[in-house]
Image 1 (cartoon, helix red, strand yellow):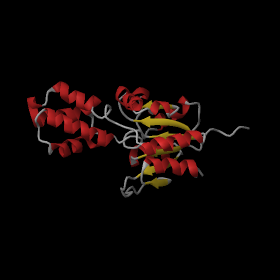
Image 2 (image 1 turned 120 degrees about the vertical axis):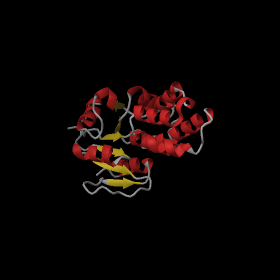
Image 3 (image 1 turned 90 degrees about the vertical axis):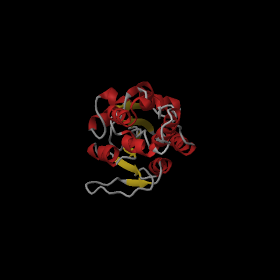
Length: 220
């Protein structure tokens, strides 16, 4: 009986790509273009909360702070395309993905967000050529940590979740989501301490490349 292909489910923002760095660069350009205080970059990053604040709320906060100095179309472009147009895939993460593919893993991106924006990131960085598929919450109607989005990811490549791993930076969306479907997980800490009392990841890694390698090199 053939051995099932191992399944690795990967978060996108701030896991495979540094979404916050890309958005910060977009914010800096936006503030400079509209002669707004450069120091306000920290305020806008806080409001954005790593992309978890709904876009409409961020837009309202920007308009309330700047009024006509921040034209509506420019704000929409910042929120719709700012990060998507600037994300890059680092060489270490690219190398880890290639090693996972060579080792026979099936790779699927599981991401919350809007389909057009997230697919732009996937294609801009060349991730579309390095994974077997992806699911976006808007497209499937379920957000992480809902089990449905993980089941959709597995079904999309004809796999099951038995033996699957989830890698991500969010304790709530990724690690709790993995636990809900019985998958093992690696939390990408980026130097942060784990503070969740209700659950713990199977493993912790300082960065995404290390997280991927830890699963590929020692999956058990």
